[in-house]
Image (cartoon, rainbow, N blue to C red):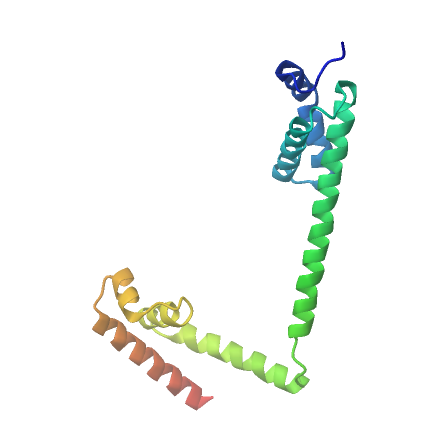
Length: 168
């Protein structure tokens, strides 16, 4: 009588014989050990789920085929995702003039310089509010200060930024 892949001892034997080789095969293809381990585990899961359909002597071939196909599908998916991201980046590019783009870049640099010129306490409150989108109450809790202190620091930060921008 032929061996059955569905028998737990037979499956364990297949696993012990081929797990490391299968993982290494995928690792050499993708260069990512975690991905290789995940794909290998998926291949063994599929072998177990389809154990009635797989002939014991063909288990190794089945595992390597499943793992290779899974890897190729992931590569294909990555290419599609990359292409989609690339298209979004390309479509999000402005159709503005080079002068406008240059002015915008210069403005960003000046803004970053102005923000970095703020006193530390004002800069922290300003960035927590404008970048992290925290409310004054949340900032006060995080910094262990009163809401009034946050309001004062923010007022001074905005006042300083306006003074700097008027000079530009």
